[in-house]
Amino acid sequence: MSHDIPIGATQVSLVQLNERSRDIFRQIVESYLATGEPVGSRNISRLITTPLSPASVRNVMSDLEQLGLIYAPHTSAGRLPTELGLRFFVDALMEIGDLAESDRREMEAKVAAVGKSMEAVLNEASGMLSDLTRAAGVVLTAKSNVRLKHIEFVRLEPERALVVLVGEDGLVENRVINVPMGLPAASLTEAANFLNAHVRGCTLAEAKIELEKALAAAQAELDQLTQKLVAAGLASWSGGESDERKLIVRGAAHLLDDLKAVEDLERVRLLFDDLETKRGVIDLLGQAERAEGARIFIGSENKLFSLSGSSTIVAPYRDGAGRIVGGLGVIGPTRLNYARVIPMVDYTAKVVSKLIGG
Image (cartoon, rainbow, N blue to C red; front, side, top):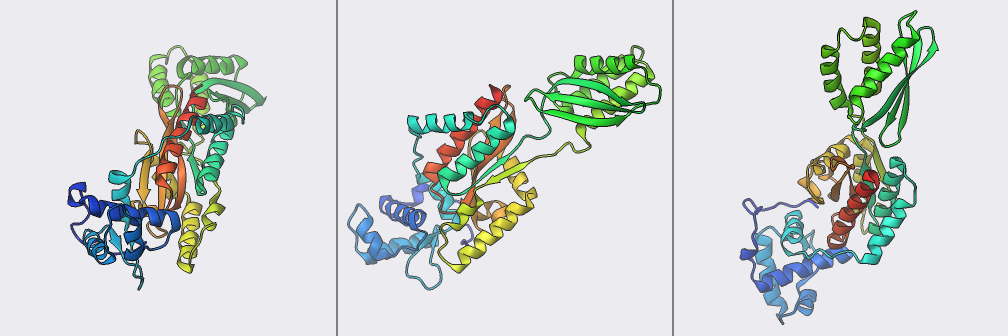
C-alpha cells in the first residue's frame, strides 16, 4: 500500500468526523477488509444507515481523503483505506469481538494436547493461529533465559568432561569441556555442588552475576582447579551465544490463498523474503514483548514489512513467574480481520503462558 499521506494528517481525532463521515469511512474499511477491493460512492450510498446520494457520499469521501484516511488506487473510482486510515479504524472505531467460550476451550485443548515440551506447545500454537486466521503464524521463543534446575559434570576422558545442564522447562543440554589433566573426581563433584547451590532457578545472565559474587566470596573455599571448572561449566552453558532466539513460522502458504493481482504476488514475495531473513522478525516480536497485551503494526509502521505492506498482530507470553519470555502472533495482508484476530492472538498468548507456567 504505497500512497502519500498529507503532511500533518497523521493525528486524526474522532472529533473531526461527524456521524455521517464515520459511517462512510467504516463502510470503506469494512468493505476493504472483506474483499480487498476499492469501493465506490454508489455502493456506499446503498450500504450506509442514513440515506445519502452518491454525490453527497463523494463529498464526504473527498474530506476523508483530505484527512489522509482513504485514497484512490490507480484510476479506480473507488477508494481504499490508507495505512493511517487502517490504524485510525483499529484504534478508534473497531469493536473487538470476544471469543466464544467454545472457541477458548477448543484452542486450549489443541495446544495442551501436544504434551509438555515447550517446543511442542509453541509449534502447535503457531500452527493453530495460522489455521484460524489464514495468515502466517509466528512464534519467537525465549531468549536463553531458561532457568537452570540442575548441573552435573561427567568425566569422559582424562582431559575432557561432559557438562549436563537441565532447565526448569525440562530441556537437557550436554556440552563437552576441556579439563586439566589429573583433575580429581572430587573437584567435579564439588564444582557441580557449588553451581547447583548458587544458580538453581537463575537465568544465564542472573547466574553469571550470582557466580561472580559467590566466587569472589568463596575464593578460599574452592581450590583453583574447581574454580576453573565452575567457570568452564558456565561458559559452556552460555554457548557463547547468549541471544539465541528461535523463530517458528507456520502456514506462510496461506498468504498465497487470496491474491488479487500481480502486485499482490510481489507483496507476498517480499514478505517471504522478510520472513526468511528472520533477524527483522525477531526484532519486531522483541518490540511486542514490551507490551502488556496484543500489539498491532500496520504496513510501514514497522520498517520490516514496509515494502510488503503487511500487518502484524503480536502478543507476549510469560513464564510461571510472570516474566515475558517470548512473543507470538500472525503476519498477513493489511486486510486481516483485526476484530477477530486480535482476541485470538491475545488468548493464544494466555494459553501458552498458562501451559509454560503450569
